[in-house]
Image (cartoon, rainbow, N blue to C red):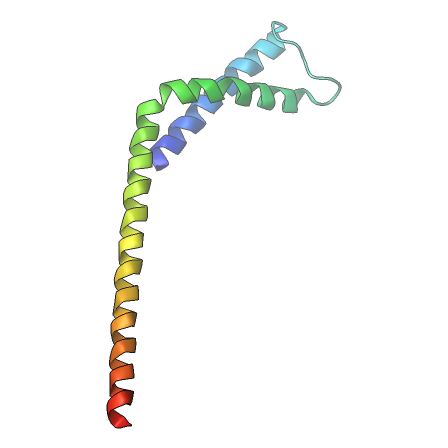
Length: 100
């Protein structure tokens, strides 16, 4: 998961550098007034999203498999704990029934 995030940030940084170069060379339009920095960031995000979607498909699939495995492990641990609590409750109920 960390690898995917770092790769995504790397693509964003690369797009940021390219867009910055295009804006300051005059090829891409500048933002209005003082919004030039925000314009560069937004344009970089807009360009990097589809690139990340296509280029990082395999890495995203690996990350999703890791997340699914982790969620399944947590669910099984919760179910095991729940069944242990049910066993303890049953024993307490039987003990109270025998004491009466």
